[in-house]
Image (cartoon, rainbow over all chains, first blue to last red; front, side):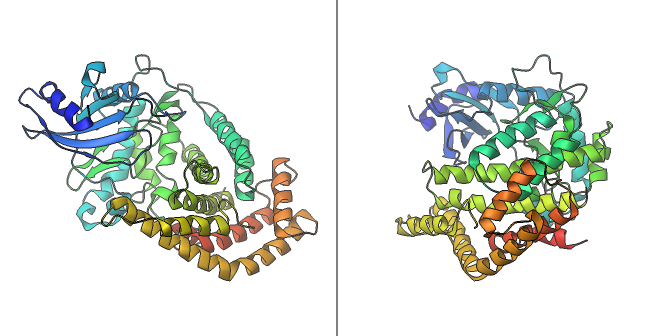
Length: 321
Length: 122
């Protein structure tokens, strides 16, 4: 059964007034994870996330059942998320999958930082991001599905191992590893639920309502709350608006004021720098799939040339350290 | 000296893309066409700038690691010295070299990247 037929079959269980699914269309081109948009015949707009049977799972990615459970837990804690309507089982014939409501808004970072349509919500967005992260970090961790745990030194070691395997002679990355290792904060007293990819690009922003949804939970783990606060400040997600450190739309002070709890700017900036370092290594990793012949697309070759983007950001951070 | 990818690898990926039959209106193809345009621009800038930038890098590296050689060899020595903590990561002479290195590389890879403006603003 193909996806459209399976959704049709599932429609009555997604909404009591629906009899069939309409306009099923694939959105993302992810290799292992598919995202589909569709509607029900009663007008309900929905999203399907699925991992087809046999698709390879990224080492760090969560099972989709865990992803759905985290979205529900974050929603219950007051974070804006899409309602999960159904976690699929074998009878649904969709493989590992769940269905959630489709939110209305914009995720393209470039538009969020620049378009006139978002001018009225931009000034409050950094503070709102801080408030939302505080909600996510307050999710009780005892009832969550199994999650990996990490801290600053652990993340550094993980990425340095990857970097060594890539055999790329990059002195800026070498220096950044040694610098960050020397200044790494001790693990937090209480590890929290970390979203893991909280940045401009994974936030659904509505022109009037502001931040209406936090997307893409597949890298969630337990760790240091400053990791999420730092990641959204990495210059690569500011879309050219480098003077506004929070996602290209706000200031550190607004983010931290919205967050409320005591996280120092210094700790945030450590994780921001580690974020740039991780992004640099990720660019090299993605290039590697071209070099090994796994993916010979020009996109994969070119991403290696974005490593220098992370490098110039790291130099700036080291100069001002 | 620039690797990951080298100019030769980029040219190869570009030729492969150009040889692919295009489905008109295909969103993926439209996206890759933009990527290909960027690749051509990188290759043109690299052809024009890399010899000079490499000579300048070799000069700076000679002073920094105290040895003679081509830029690639000296760069590898610098990486090893950093790994061994023989040079401290925030050493001013090192940072000055890394700054020039980053500016030279972004001038080829992505001259419009905002991190360049941020670095020059001090």
